[in-house]
Length: 102
Image (cartoon, rainbow, N blue to C red):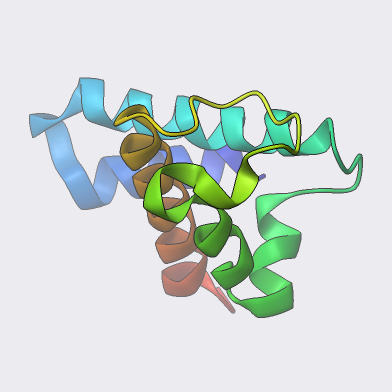
């Protein structure tokens, strides 16, 4: 995960109006990576983006993470918190899209 680049990009895109939201997006993206690495030690949001622009990861997190039930993944599956986690993944993939090739 390109944490420094993502943080800078969030600052540029969201500006000073949302410091808490920027921090939460970064924290949740890190949580996604950490959690998925428990199932696959090679997991990274960057590699998922290279594979399919992150579509598989987004699909797994969508609809409150119902597709992750029974996998042992430690996320709040079935709760509204999953919407925030999904949003964090989408923001990180948007960052990768907008900074690709730079």
